[in-house]
Image 1: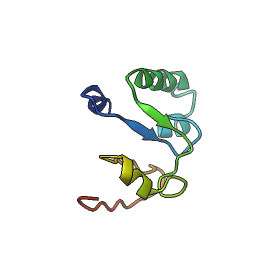
Image 2: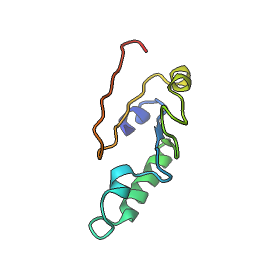
Image 3: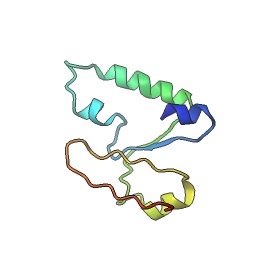
Image 4: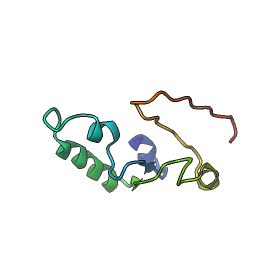
Amino acid sequence: MLTVGRVGHKVTVFERADRIGGLLRYGIPEFKMEKRHVDRRIEQMKVEGVEFKTNANIGHNVPVEDLKKILTLLFCAAEPLKPAICRLQAGS
């Protein structure tokens, strides 16, 4: 993800939860991995120009049609705790 940012592309991360970190933040107990490590990496990414939008549930409160108008590429990472099927159509 950061590689594309380093070569001049704008990177935006849409996070469904109220805090960035996904499975690292919510799926791993604090005693196994301190969340300060996640926070430190997020801060590094912000310094490198990555924009984060929380409470952004694509397809629900963030319409896919709106994203198609402003994004060149959309990578969706499905929730690891639920099975998901991603259907992508070339050119859309």
